[in-house]
Length: 132
Image (cartoon, rainbow, N blue to C red):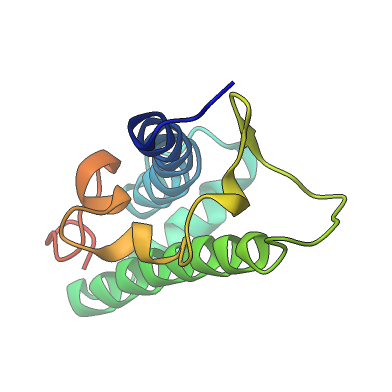
């Protein structure tokens, strides 16, 4: 089966949307729930209490740290995936018939551009006051 450029973009976007919703938004959303004291996790009550004692500035710093940490983890994951391009590897991420690591020269670049995955698919945009 021949893969067209449009198919490749669609598959890359499917993967990006999966990462943004399933990982980035899930982690940031759970962090927001912890910060606001609304987390349903049994072991989060004491942490939520400690966070409630922080100043607004400290809470903003915690939010920024969480967001930057999640984005860094995603970027590192994409770099590691990309570093296997063209090599025999036990780790492959397939969308349809396409190995994601073979699609782009710089997968991490898909995260942060004005038309990148975060901007297009994430609930938590970069620079959004809720996050920073």
